[in-house]
Length: 145
Length: 157
Image 1 (cartoon, chains in turn yellow, brown):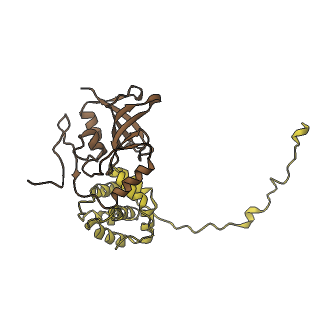
Image 2 (cartoon, chains in turn orange, red; image 1 turned 30 degrees about the vertical axis):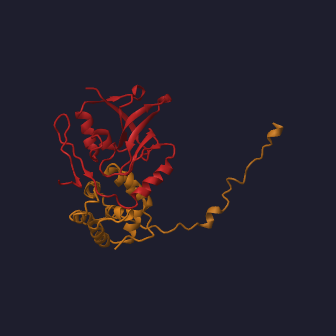
Image 3 (spheres, chains in turn purple, blue; image 1 turned 90 degrees about the vertical axis):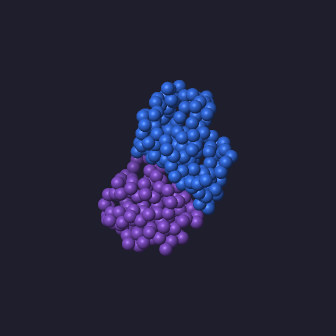
């Protein structure tokens, strides 16, 4: 199963192409929206299954090349490190040259997190009730000073 | 003759410690070339050298291994600097041939290159390789490695 088309991987692709070290790509992917969207929309089991399929296959394009990195990053955002540890058991295709080092950095920097979904903020009209602070002002005519 | 597609070279520092390295001579993933071309448009004032993108070496491979292989572990680059008699130099004393490394806010070396021209007002031109893309002769900060501190080194013995 591929990652959905609506997840934009363009920036991650560019960053992977210019990366000289796995550390660089770890930081850039963490700053991107894509792993967060994957983590929010798929369970850890689904992400792991997608990772196993994607990393075993020779990538045919840049989107496929970045997919396993994104999936590992999405697993890193989950609360349980078990799935990340399970992922590194599988041998990736050699074209994913930094995948093992990448996974190790994620495991080394894993922190259990809890994601809380916060609903949209609804504006309360009472905010706009005059407080009086801007009502009792004095007008100064500078031309008469 | 056996042709190695991927592998590493036997190389070590002057103190005899192995330099972890990796080269990959396989074909590029389709789309890489197009992405490298878009970088040329993004940095139009820099001198994008002829030559195709390559996964056989990276910037550190250019700076520290004569373009023969890739070095991707920042701690290995630090070891080379320490064990191969590199000395840190001030920017004001910079000379062509010196090595520049780009250090991010976490202290990791994310890029390196070799100074090829000293400009007025403390500027310099550097030749470096941008990941899997081609080599570029660029101004110190005109490259896709933002928010980095530049450190300069010279081999003195």
